[in-house]
Amino acid sequence: KTLNLKPSGKQSLQEFADEKNPTNFVHKVVVAVYYLREVAGEPSVSTNHVYTCFKWMKWKLPSDLKNTLHQAGAQGLLDTSDGANLIVTALGENTVEHELGKSKA
Image 1 (cartoon, rainbow, N blue to C red):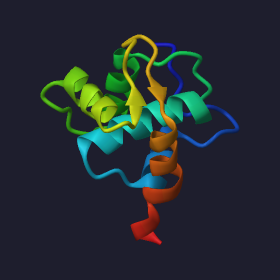
Image 2: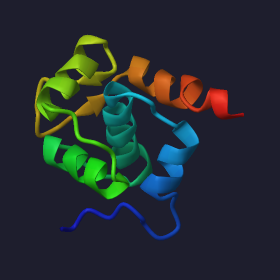
Image 3: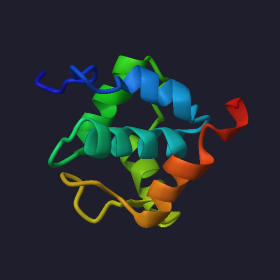
Image 4: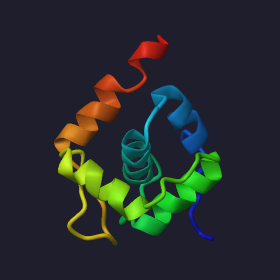
């Protein structure tokens, strides 16, 4: 209830996700975690935070969100060793900052 996905003076999750245009579940969870940490400034991001992002964005939920997060971890995009403190890895940062959204240009 306290998660602000449209913070004053910052890009909203909607604007950020529209810019990055994630097209699969793994990229959507990485975009959500990246947004919460790097744009919204959340000190820790949990599975529940990511769930809230999916609902707020009206994205279809994966059948097993925790498994999708672990898939992102297996691909090296997220550190999921602590489900209450998800972290975007350097590979995940590069994916969000340099790969996603390029096709829309």
